[in-house]
Amino acid sequence: MESINHLDLPGIPRIIFGAGSLARLPDILGGYGTRALILTGGESFKKSGRLTALTAQLHRSGISAKVLSARGEPTVQAVDAIAKAYREESITVVVAIGGGSVLDCGKAVSAMLASEGSVKDYLEGIGAKKPPGMKVPFVAVPTTAGTGSEATTNAVLCDRQEGYKRSLRHEAYVPDVALVDPELTISLPPALTTACGLDAAAQLIEAYTSTKTDKATDAPAIEALACVGEALPALGLGLCHDLALREKMSFAALVSGIALSRSGLGAVHGLAGPLGGLFPVPHGVACGKLLFPVMSFVVKKVLDAQDQIARKRFADIGRIFSGRGDADDTAACLAFLDVLRDWFQKLRLPPLSSFGVTCADFDRIIAAADGKNSPAALTPKEMKAVLEIAR
Image (cartoon, rainbow, N blue to C red; front, side):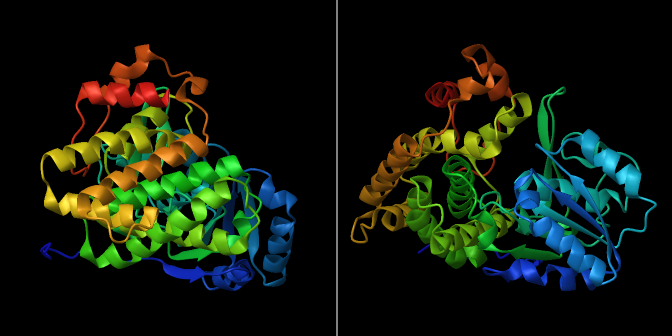
């Protein structure tokens, strides 16, 4: 039996989950004051009429709201510019409505409104300063089901000129409220649904099999993995307007954020980070393309090493994904890979080459890679094989 050697239970957001819960946002924001800064992503939220309705509700409630568009992956420059423009505006709450990139931008802005200097000064592995943990209250409203940023303690920022993606991280930076309304994901096309869903799947798999796995999140992670196994293939293959499936994926993404904040991630994200720092590869696409080839090497190494703890955990996932509840651990691990292979083939994502990645780039990607908390480390040769499959 696997021992229980530690628990790590930092705070999580106040979680409001359910179809139609967006209607509660004005009251939530009003609880923090009368000056809101709202960050949104592309045009979908605006075109749906929801943004107009929200700002009208806020106006009737006596809340002034400044709305900014935060397109693309958040950069140091963008966060610094927003923080500089609004630091003296007495903002009482920041709300981000969008995908993971928008939520990360809002999370970083809420922190930097309460801190001086550049956010670069506080980035892991880049800056020399420790984040102080002060922030303006922050509300996260995801419109995709992928990153789980609505429940994490970090914001990932990129700088492609310098070629990095790094985190601004502090336990205090977890959103004050995560308002998860699955109805907001209904309009996502299959390709974006697939990319986001595979990111959530990778996060759950890596957190559950991490060398620093936290027993406190095992039960919700298992439930979330079951949701992924049921919902992701169906959504990716066209059942985009099925609200019940959307609810399952939104729940899975939320739990993935909670789980990764406690257990960390693994080799998939260890490669996806450098890819996104050096090339304009959307994070979900990077994770989706890497998931099967990376796990093929990791699971083989786990089996060869007779790592009973990791083998059991991969087997747990294999039984859930494949429905083979009676399979022994080794067979279940192989069934896990069979399912990932099937997803890789059917849930088609663009190749890495479409974002400018060539074989000549492999060495610098690998040089920046990190195995994180994977139960098995990949060699540079194995990482090259993974990148070639994904390219």
